[in-house]
Amino acid sequence: YYPTEQANAYNSAYSDATKVLESSTATDEEYTNAYDALKVANEALVMNMPEEGKFYTIKNDGHYITGSTSGGRIALKTTKDADAIYYYDGNHLLSYNTGLYIGLNESDWTFEAVGSKDISTVEFSVSTTTSGAFNICCGGRWLHKTDAYVNRCTYNTCGDAHNWIIEE
Image (cartoon, rainbow, N blue to C red):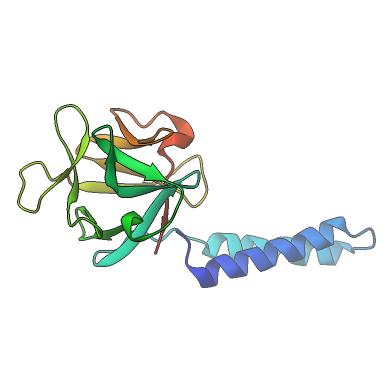
């Protein structure tokens, strides 16, 4: 996710630059100033990686990862409520609603109790295809969005299905 102050500065510079571009009376100096301001705002815009000790919701295309299951897999839903909140301890994602960690058994995603040997370490990387999104690897598998649940993939090559938006 982007820090609010930096995101607001970028959005403001982008809006101002758009107005200059759409203006039929803009001068060369106005074009240059708008470009320079947008460039500075863009360079200052960096992704915040999830931080240990914070609560997050994680979504893809309006579907939130929940603490519930669907057909033995981690369910997705379109509502943002307590079931969609996760605590990040620096290595794992813990469901606020159930108190269980996201884990990986031999065949699917699952939830694991505290102390289970199957609790998977979570790694976040910045998406190379979607601005503001993350790819999430858990137990050597990438979280992959389907219509109703979270699937797993060996490779991070499924495009937007791997692009998760993380919100505080």
